[in-house]
Image (tube, rainbow, N blue to C red):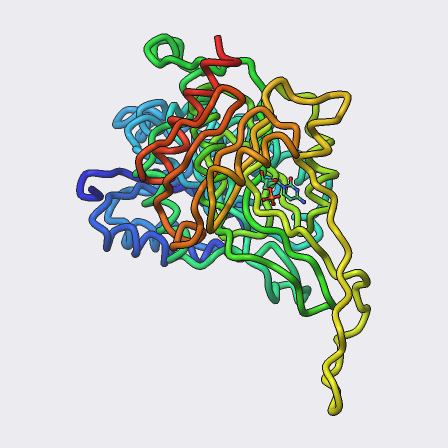
Length: 413
Ligand code: C5P
């Protein structure tokens, strides 16, 4: 697959720029070609000569370099790639991308490209958490730019936290994932020819999806959780975005990449998930795929609970809010409300009872007695007031697409 793929790598100015050299090496090793563009401040950290040697291609630095323009225009440079990768992406570069500023070669290419863009941020932890950067990241994500989460750890500046550039191997995996995925719907919308060719029945509709487990803290280091991977919910969010919907994905703690064009809000606990879901209202549909913990620790200890010699400390539990049931009663209840039911026995009976109990419109019931919760396939039954539809076992992505087509039949254009 990688043999003929071309990467345009834009290197911003930051201490992490040196890691882009390793990334170039890994991309080449996979048989892809890479052309590098480096910003003026990036050149303070890495030389164009190093990148040229590693990429075996000329490196571009200046917008008004006539020699480069005569050989290859900047539009061509931005379009010949299969994927544009910005690594490292500084806070400044992301702010410019968000604002559509094109005042040097890197930012001009980013504005001119019609290709998917992977952005790999690296910056000081406070810069990463600054409201301005949060806004820029959120807007870029909703513009279908794929922004990776930075790693957490010790920073070059001596502080600790989120903002470290992910390891080059992880970036390479992300590149390979993106090259294997279809372009998101929001990118297609920017291109009228494709937009017409693609059927986007959920265009103009807002859909909330919850996914993953929740973590309910017992003390600072322990929590109650379950085996949900988040894959089914993420696949549904992706399918909805590809069909043109504006998607808010409220995700519990999972190790998954945000699907292109999806707005993702991360949460830990059931109560946080409820707050974020309510913030996302109103919506045309809500699909509650998350495996929300039914109970949390009644009290969260502020210090780590010590092991006792005589008897274990009993764990008192308190019931969590039922987000699905509360949405069903909410004054801004989504027009179509879908719950999931993970059962290990009497699947259809339990699902039908759940439909009534929760007050939702459909229940998607799945048997989780096998490896469904961590696995890649799912076999589901759609329970509605009109009866039960059983679908054959399929990849979670296929189930997601089929489910969203059914949703589009009800709320779509
Ligand atoms: O009752 P049960 O956990 O089986 O219900 C599953 C459905 O209810 C799922 O759609 C899940 O996302 C939702 N749920 C919820 N809040 C809870 C528990 C479950 O929204 N506290």
